[in-house]
Amino acid sequence: MSNPAGVSAEKIPRHIAVIMDGNGRWARERGLPRIEGHRRGSESVRNCTAACMEAGVSFLTLYAFSKENWQRPPDEVKSLMGLLDRFLAERTAEIMERNIRLRAIGHLDDLPEKTRRRLETAMEKSAGNTALTLTLALSYGARTELADAARAIAREVRAGTLDPDTIGEATVSSHLYTADLPDPDLLIRTSGEMRISNFLLWQISYAEIVVTPKLWPEFGKEDLFAAIREYAGRHRRYGGI
Ligand code: IPE
Ligand code: IPE
Ligand code: MG
Image (cartoon, rainbow, N blue to C red; front, side):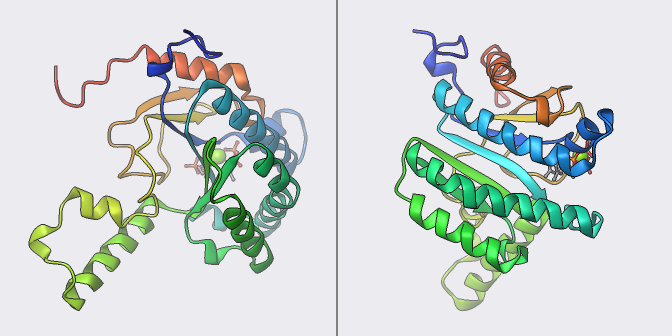
């Protein structure tokens, strides 16, 4: 049985992570302000989420705002936070209707208070939903995440609740923000840039990477299905032969 992506069910990635890049370039190409690109980008979030659900993907993680993105001009940061706030205000009902569990990873305390509260409400409300786990990476940086994990582990050792000799990969994984998520199988980056930009460094160790030249605001369902097909055709060896 083949699904909307055109591949058999066992070849569908369980977890897709996306570096949603190219909003600014999309706007510039059209002589529009950058924020217009971000606005259109939030439409792509809806399409991509729907496409993942159609294809039977269980986890979708979207890089929405990095730790480093705070360095952008204050106007742009403010607009991006405004869009996030609107997304939460307008889409929570839809998230519930579609049985989506909303989560977030990153330093959520950095977000404007009102937006953080909206986010927390949406996460609490949707915690029991089961169709798709949608994780937004907000004020997220992978190195910060690893440093946070190191600090948490060190505290447990100091408190005497963790024996340093037992620290292994599972200890680190379980102290990351993603402790309850499987590692991504497929990492997609839009707009052609061949870099990771501090996203999920630990978790993508064996992810298959697909970089598409499409800019995020023009990334649609068919593009997501095409990335899944490319993934399905790969041979994951994990160091074997
Ligand atoms: C991605 O688009 C959105 C965020 C990083 C918030 P960009 O804003 O980075 O778009 P480009 O890379 O300038 O085209
Ligand atoms: C990565 O995109 C961050 C997000 C998509 C949120 P950037 O546009 O910030 O990354 P660089 O600056 O090209 O590395
Ligand atoms: Mg960019």
